[in-house]
Image 1 (cartoon, rainbow, N blue to C red):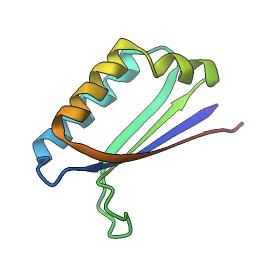
Image 2 (cartoon, rainbow, N blue to C red):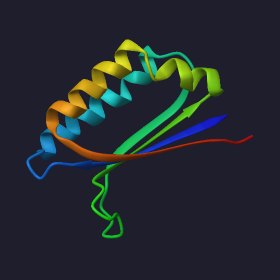
Image 3 (spheres, rainbow, N blue to C red):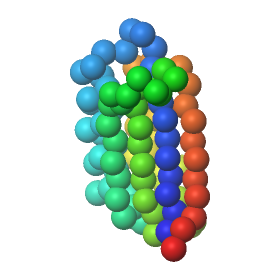
Length: 98
């Protein structure tokens, strides 16, 4: 299995409503993209985050599923929305486990 982890830092102008809409759109990806076993996303509440506002984890069946996810039109639409609402930075980590 593959774990895909994303930390997102937003512009100070990004609203809570926009963040919640992003979560809503992201969670729907499980219904649209084959190979997603689990997807979770939420707004960070920790003061230890170094300014990152949101976390995302996506669990995939295998590397091929991750590779197919990245260019998938539904994922690309979500990335467009993310840019529209003011993403400043992101950190992405992918790892494989049994």
